[in-house]
Length: 99
Image (cartoon, rainbow, N blue to C red; front, side):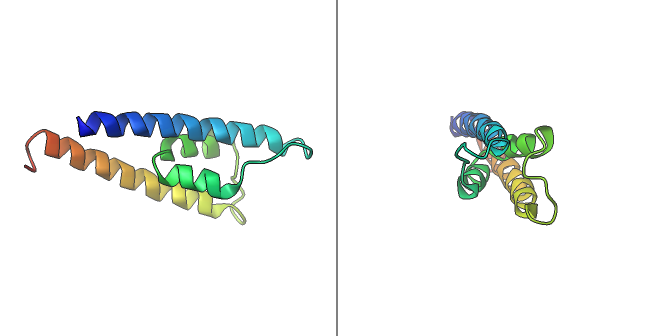
């Protein structure tokens, strides 16, 4: 059950993160529009939205400057690895391998 809840959280957080990347990308083209703070995007990537963050970075080409925005790539990759590890541990525990 915990595995299904975590899968759901990863999906919701990733969809929300991708949506916020899209909104921020659109706002970056218009100086009069309000931007989404970087700490919001990084926090959402860290707490479950790494897949959506990677989609935003590579799919929408947002926050890709390798000199000033490298922390987005690092955070997204490390968070994706950590979230995959948590999913694997939950899967193994649910299957009885680790119980």
